[in-house]
Image (tube, rainbow, N blue to C red; front, side, top):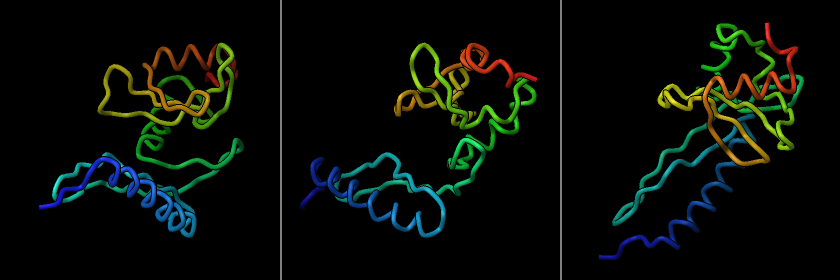
Length: 136
């Protein structure tokens, strides 16, 4: 019996992402290929998210972004925090969402194009340092 190999799966993932991005662009959305398990068969989860836009540009309205939008006012922040580009300690930062399954570090953000996570207090510190007008 032939099994999938790691190089094959990597190559297939790249091709899947390219094909899914074409489909997603057609429907004004984004596509994400999740983790892949493989052996005799290959399994993955594919997620499509609608794009939305604010004054800072387009972003994916993922379930994490929706959750954060619903929680921002309770945190004492304006909804403009989501997808707001700003600089913190010389790095370009964008707040992306709130992961309910990560109690310690639920805030998802992008720093210089890389995905990171942090706690709510750290997010508030980053915002307060550069954009204090975003506090209610």
